[in-house]
Image 1 (cartoon, helix red, strand yellow):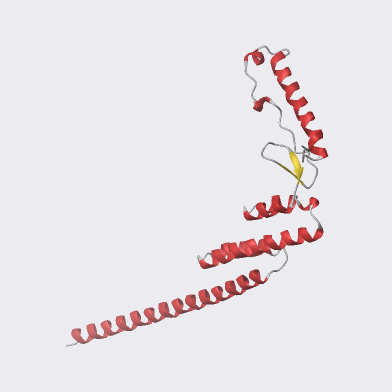
Image 2 (spheres, helix red, strand yellow):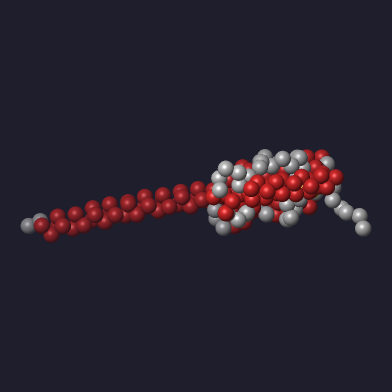
Length: 189
């Protein structure tokens, strides 16, 4: 049976095993600090290294690197991890990259549409601003139109509230004036 591991994955496994063995040996020997010998080995004692994975690779659940695929990018988009989706771009063709970018734009537009339905205009604006970094899609355009309509409705309601407040103030002044006039009539001899 033939292994499906890539050449980079086959090279990485012995290197990782050698690193783990040397870290275990170093922890067991201890060196100058004898207190270090008595502590059991834990993976946390292995120094963390920065990612040296080539561009366009991802790590599997077992920690082995492999070439990124469109499915990895789509999964990252579905989980709203757009930066992770873009990290797969070096391994994708130009057509695949563009499709993922459109998928990101549509995902942002769907989230903006849900925020608009909930009445959260600030979230809609933020999501649409993020979506502007990606290709324009019909869904994003409809959400922009919906946001514009929602803002017009909000402006109209604010104007109606202002007019109602002015009308109530006018009525209060007229009532106060009538009460003063009635008081003057009662005081007149």
